[in-house]
Image 1: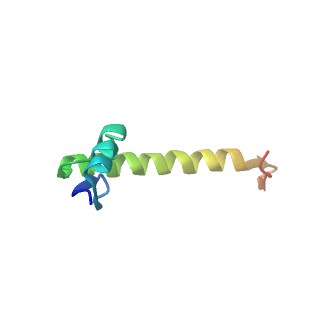
Image 2 (image 1 turned 90 degrees about the vertical axis):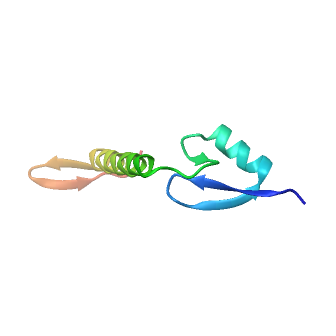
Length: 79
């Protein structure tokens, strides 16, 4: 059986993975996974990034889905 090591996700989750998988995750997705715990500064940056992404996605959905016509909100079907 392969030795397991902790892999740390930026959101605070910790996964015990086989060493080869943990190293692959940290190498292939360095913005998400690390072999060492994320610092408080890195976690705050991640939380801010995710909040900005949610806000941008929400604005994009509102922009695509709604039109103002004669003061009424009309919802369009997806194209």
